[in-house]
Image 1 (cartoon, rainbow over the protein chains, first blue to last red):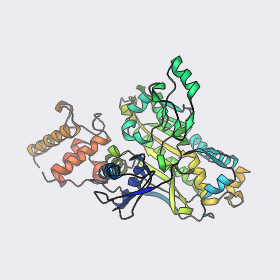
Image 2: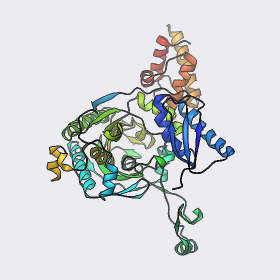
Image 3: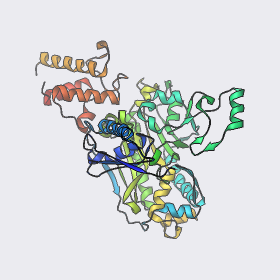
Image 4: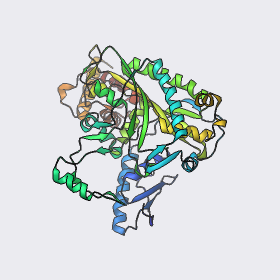
Length: 398
Length: 84
């Protein structure tokens, strides 16, 4: 990673309202490869960029112009979303106040393979197994059918549900060498890694037909596509690797490029999906109380890219489509989304032609839990010594 | 509002949707609702909301966005709150 040698300060063309400073700051990672870090002043009147290398005036102007495009796109005509809090246990007392990341690294409980990519040791793995057990209990309550989904997802699938327009910045592409003896032989003889990565030109690779999957439930919707829904409703559960590239926003186990998500998925009528989403929330409330998690459940929006952010986020908020479980991170007086309760209306039913017995498009929803984040938030609240963990967890992990 | 005025407002809303959603006039029926056309999706809905704000002075907030999901609902709301 190059040392930062220069900073660039940009005065936004529009003042950034407080409810958007975090969003603008996180989007700065995608503005220019020269940006190593970004900070939006709390006043919203200044953006300070740390660059990977010194930039001449014309290069600075180029970067500043791109920053302004992001600001204008996110801020112009923005409406403050109404935050609805469904559960507030954020100030439940917890015994730990320190970032567990350094100690996890020092103990060998996690090891970093690359930015956003970690291996997990026995303690974190057992903790995740425990949470998985609780999530599977939730799935069993709904008699959810178990599924296993692939890590890869066809590009045409994501195109069909508008994913390329909504989240282009976080896509991870999968390809392979072209079926060409010369290309394969050249690769075998010359492939090597330098500080920029693999030194092979793109023309050695086949056109991209697949990506690493960004979500679990999409696979179920595609399995149900273009046919009437079998029966009136489906409840399924699966755990899968998910991939969302977050550039310089990738931090510890908080924000991984490759993470694992357990989902319980509902397909059926609007009432069926919404009722089950609510039932799932109430059942998980008991689980979080049992494990002593300090958290809040509040309305949220997905991290849409700039082209769709303003409209989609307001829409999501107005229809209360997404509620996040935000666990407290005491060491930085902040919260981390460890799961979410989602309702997609009949978006997938319409786009994928999944129909109910009356011929109308099916509604879908899911409850999703980020397993690494769940473990990390718990460790941030209770530390690495199981002796001070809640009794229910000590018992289960014994 | 009498029947003629009501029909006139419905026609205005239908014209607004034709423009906002960029769809042929014959696809906009008087009872059309969110989700009935591929174009009236989440992005299309927000286009409709912004057009209503510009044309009728309707305040767009979470409540109106969630409530104005059909032509009859929009017509009823404009009758009560709009400034044609």
